[in-house]
Image (cartoon, rainbow, N blue to C red; front, side, top):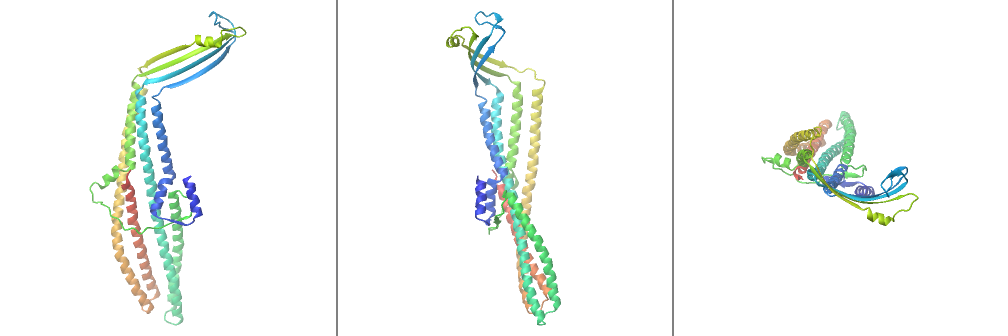
Length: 427
């Protein structure tokens, strides 16, 4: 319902602009993977309730109405003879497993499984967020590159007009116009590819958000660059221990250990109780019989029983189930090692890329200023006729490229910061 309302809104108010935070807030609630995880939590809540319900007795009641034709027992004299009779049986019964250790273990297991599903939901949210962040910045970088090309082309078109006027008055050679137009063609080709890259990256971002209607645009916020304490000796360990993927595998190990105890519980005896109340009405067809109420009272019967079941030999099934459960624990510990290895690699990669991008951004800031000054001086020389059109084109493009590199580098720092925030959020 929420998603339908959202689709209605984006159709009613087209071309909304979302920040990264808005994207993450939406995806962490509305993405199908997250919703599936939420349903799994609800299912496990029901399984906890069902496992507790096993401790309660079961009860049922019934009535049977039967006719017997031919050889049968005459209820009047308890002799077998050829007779046609009607029988009505009434009963109510209850059965109760008074002691079965497996039932109590299953309650513990269902609680562990619910805990696991909660961690998996947070894990799904993190995976969705990480994907959204990567797609968001990919789109921003492609859009920035397109802006640079559009600025370059717009500047070249103006430059062509000015150069053609100067050619007419004899201030510049005709070859300057040809040089500029040749470079314009190259940039126009790059512009087509850049538009395609931007459009594809937007499609990928919308897909990461699980939105099928293209009525959104996305913008960067002007946030100050953040710094993280990567020098902390326990930096990776702290992020690892509170990561939901790590917590998930830990609870899975607990569940598999509990399954060993459940498998072993088949060695233990079970103690059961039962209670049955019954009565019946019987008559020979075509003959008179005692009143229904009189027979019903007279034929009432109650049974109370207890049973102890002691397993002795079960074709080695319990032994093999125990050994399989133990192997599952060993296997889940290997899963833990894999998760630790993958998370450590991911966290260290983010750390390395953040530090590299931060250093690169600092260097590019200086380069951008130098390129800007170079462009300003070259523009003066070009206007004074001291620089040819092609050289000025190269200087101008270098400045625009430096501008894009600076934006791209800043985006990279922010991207790694946002990725790190997902890991720092923990559970």
